[in-house]
Image 1: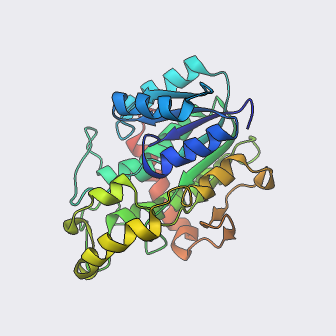
Image 2: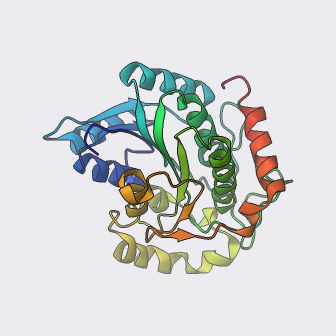
Length: 285
């Protein structure tokens, strides 16, 4: 990764930070993005200790105005971006809206990667890696994209729903940029004892899982405490020569290609998610 520049959103903690660490260790220049400027700079100082190759930019990437500013700042710092890793995630216990009036998990997991990738396309000369998570692959509810009807259910979670929509949007994006030299792939990290997961309350879980939350709280730090493991797939897709030129592919936590879920392959689902993203970003891109 010597001479390569990588941008990682949600890079101040959890899987994003470990992804940034892994790529910096491979010689990349890493720009990490976090909402809190103090925390972002602290993470950059920690990861860049000894090589000075890690930088921080503060931005709330769920806001369209911050995304526009972020893209402008990246353009000022770089004449080329080799890898964009859309990693940022959020999991509030109830439906909330961003300042743009967009449901927050949809904004973070679907609209942010869509917007930032389009804004940075003039600089991008390589790879886009979008990070899914949770339990993706379920049905995409076209009348509930922004949790207008329900945010949680017995097994339904808007978090998982938006991560599935991210996959559908990514597959369509890969198709849109075919032949441009830009590749778009999706990485599944598996589970990790991340700050976001640690902050989750019982109210954030679908109803069927709530009785076992105490058990999950006890087991997760022991089973999923090593965050270098869930960062493997994103580091692999960002750096490995094995995937040079590979696009429109879904990779598991073991860095292996896997079939796309049926809901992701459904063209009507792709069209509807894409059209909503275009509509919501009309003034930004």
